Length: 342
Image 1: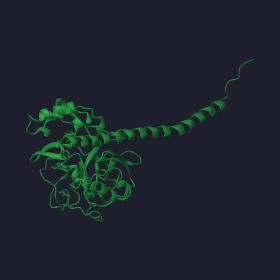
Image 2: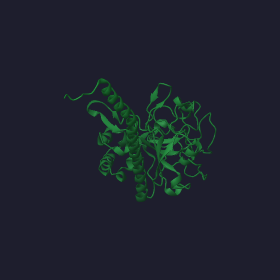
Image 3: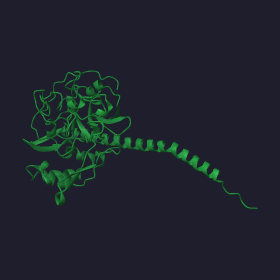
Image 4: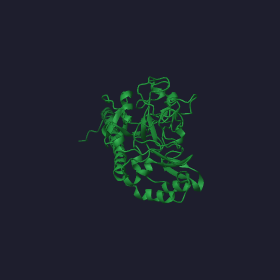
């Protein structure tokens, strides 16, 4: 007796069932992968925070948010200072050795040569769609540097030139990117990683668990419905550099152009805000434009929000719905106000 084979209808039914199962399982697999990437991102931020803590334990102060070497000459970033405390001592030693022989070290090709093609995984969010590297120079002198997904938080400022003054904070530099120079579109110095200053934990009177120090900036933002920009805080200069301005920001009378600093951000906008959301239509007039905009917002490709690290070392995913007022309070070290639920 011949064995009965599959009919065409039966085969199609099986294929349809398999298709349904794949359709059901694929989102679950993608969600699991994103959860793993989000966990790795959180671990990266925690490593940076613990590196900052260990730096403070060793030197009794935090690193400069950004250093100037001489007037108008780039100095080093806080990311460089924390390398030995983030399992990157060999790279730090190479950079330190070159700094001693170059008067213009961090703007010099020698420094980029030492960091050329260095794989620093904790600086990169695995969910980020942004380019992981940036190339400086060309040909035999081309140097490829990592583009960090994270930036130090220098403080908070009011919402913007046309916004409500929801924080009474004067330690915010003017930016000559705008005419007239707007006092709320430059860097703030009310946080814990500040240009040309090295702060101690004692300066954080609001408490280390209530003050952010590292934030994520790892997704595209849009200057129009279709035009996207890379908000990376090291764009055009690299993660090695801090600032080339000698200005110490003490009040809104100071002018400090965002292009003169790198790897720092000031909180002025909601998590994930951009023009396409329609939630803050004039945000570009508030310091979140151009290369290394001082107020480029916390951005991430995670569906729920962006990672931030606090001074005590704990890490939290801040939702896009986090109240802007609370966000700014978390960025300011010493306002003495109770932080709303977030």
